[in-house]
Length: 349
Ligand SMILES: Cc1cc2ncn([C@H]3O[C@H](COP(=O)(O)O)[C@@H](O)[C@H]3O)c2cc1C
Ligand SMILES: O=C(O)c1cccnc1
Image (cartoon, rainbow, N blue to C red):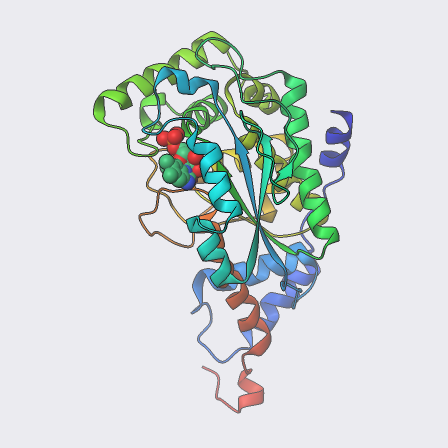
């Protein structure tokens, strides 16, 4: 835990000089000022993160953290818990939506077992299990504080190991049946957003199950009494192992000054935890899309992030984040490959 504190204390702000240089360069390109909208802001922030106007984004990674949830016994998902392991197997075999989109984006998918209930003996899985699923948050804490810190550290280490292999752009993804329930609990605990405004249909639950899911989240908050000023405590009481793992991915990226694109509801709640643990990590995040999950917009707003895409998606896995890779890359190409008014001999306004 001390090592986590140390990491958080050593985060550095964005490179102001690189951002100024980027803004200056963009202002000279052959287009009306500001006409590339969010791509312009993205390019400037990418320069601030990496310190370069032309960062190497060749190797791109989607980190899929997988975990199980004791709260599934309350009947909060439309799918049975064993689907977590089955879908991880599917991802390892390249058959999930995230694999397809990653292939298109030229990115590699890495699945990490940070908290799966079942052991999956597959050499393609990064085996870093902290514990075999959480306990039922409606009855007590999900895990211990130490386990939550270990799961966060697993995310940090995963980024470090991939960065050593040359990966320079990251996306967050997750697999864990039931994980929209702890995500809602964490969001309400950290922001005070009412549970009713936040709990959504996840994998597609019916009205009856939705009412039950709300009650379960309220019960989890009542039983555990999380302290909104203590994000690690919130994660351990009402969170999940893959949520903590993804918070660690964000912190690891911020530490190594690598851009990280966040996905839907679960990923965004994980990122919110990271920004509460280390506020400076917020500047290293890019929001990819707005998911249909009810609490997602509020989770993004709580960090003042605006998403690039709105596709009516509600899947998770990292699917939206990996789709946004191409936009980040486009912003960098714009900054480097467009002609300037001067080089093209075009008259300025
Ligand atoms: C086949 C299948 C593939 C998925 N891929 C992502 N999720 C998504 O759905 C789950 C969260 O929703 P809930 O809280 O309602 O269980 C997570 O595993 C999330 O990644 C999936 C869910 C299913 C069923
Ligand atoms: O927004 C998400 O990430 C999401 C929504 C529903 C189910 N799983 C994930």
